[in-house]
Image 1 (cartoon, helix red, strand yellow):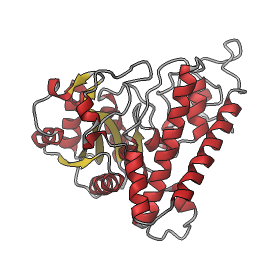
Image 2: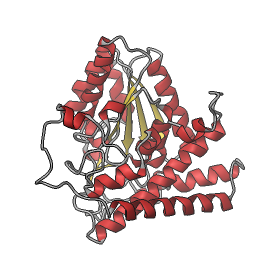
Image 3: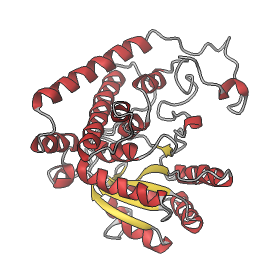
Image 4: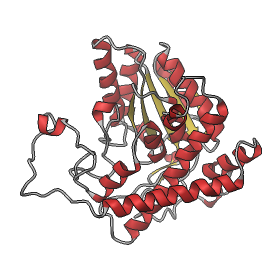
Length: 343
């Protein structure tokens, strides 16, 4: 959500395109710098487990994050640092999970990408292969049964997830029940190393929505302004009772599947095509062209974010890991784990 903007706008006045875009860009920038830091720490042997970067997908991710409200449900995936931050995740929460800090949201008990705060509608990822769609469906069903209306559930997925049974079953369920579900699909041209030509033959993954009676839109995933418009419209339509919405963004993953992967299989022609544009640079050029900011301000923001992240990493590295002799390893349904840590 646009928390930085809303905090400065307590009267609840309409948030204009300039403020929305600037807020989304700052989430993109914070996500990029944070991802780069995680990559450096991984290469230095300071992080155990996988590190999966969202480089090239930040515009799409930030767009869905800023389009949601605090009362909504969001199930981000491995490349959604920008969306996570926009929805309310703190830099400390992200870093604490990567370092296994006992003060993090998962208390050092789970993998670094499986993090969230379910009580706040921020769902930890089970799997990136379509599994989170049915989880969001369940959350929306629960709210319907409780008489809660006006909320939306969103999750993100990649092109590879559309080839799984979980995707088809959950999308069909959402369509039949007309759930306010928004699927944000990053068609980044590869399912790990498998090109889309070996996954499906339809011209556009949005075509898959037709058979289920689901509304779909396509967007240039490298264009922040376009992503904000299309994602915002999809969320608004789901919220107003038009049923599930599928947003398909065409882009290219500008890194390997994870930091363990050198991505040498990516076709150089794709890298040099419009799909290979860096959405962060495209957003910066747009903001400068609109005269909504200047190069000095952009540099200042980056410097502030770098300092924020470096200080957060230093703080978390001093924090304790779970003590197996003192920790009470109880189920998540217990009172012990349902209560959040005091900061």
